[in-house]
Image (tube, rainbow, N blue to C red; front, side, top):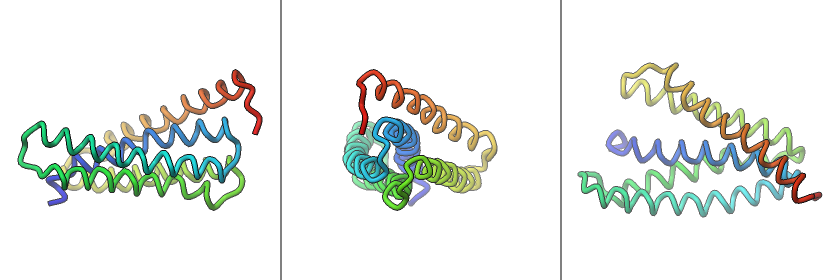
Length: 160
């Protein structure tokens, strides 16, 4: 059954990876407080996972394929929230916000590595190409978000 909903799992995992590596990177430079970043990320993540699950439900239902919209939304939302918890946890455990960011990024790479390996084995596709694609998408968004966080902090004169 999980193979039938692999697209839903990929959607939740990949969207959370790309969105939250970027958001946490931006928050790190804008807020500069691990606990605040962690709580902000957690609230955003819970809301975003519900939003993604609802969107997957509507999308699956409108496509009229054989997949169950409730199961598809469950897999998407669950993959999303698990990813968010993994990425946010360093901020809740580590006081140094830069070290927490490094740990979150390492966690993101680890998640990409594990999932890509699993996916490439099941679908019999080249691991390296798929891994590099997911890696550069996630880290590219993170780098751009670093810059946005710095820019917003300077423009708005935020000093926490």
